[in-house]
Length: 78
Image (cartoon, rainbow, N blue to C red; front, top):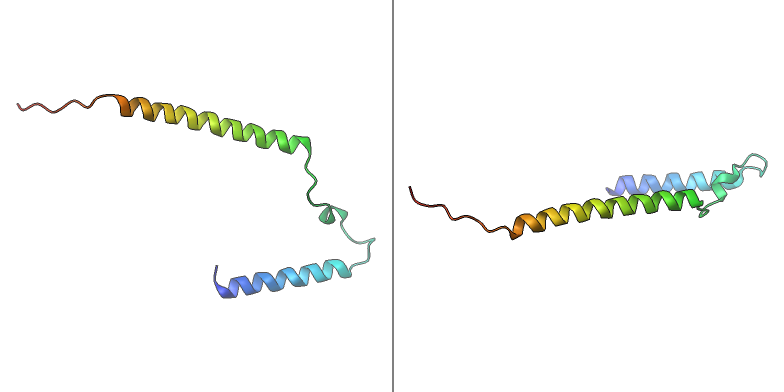
């Protein structure tokens, strides 16, 4: 990331945070303040994704191992 992009991102973040805090509490979106709450559905989706990646990686690894363990035929001269 270039210095200009990094500086611009930092300035936008500071200004947005300041403006968000300056709003009256009746106009704030409470969902922005609720960070870190994870539902069981999120956990199950991530667990299912991790398990499926592990299964696919195991299948590919077993294919690679079986292909690597087969002997290579030496070419014979004609």
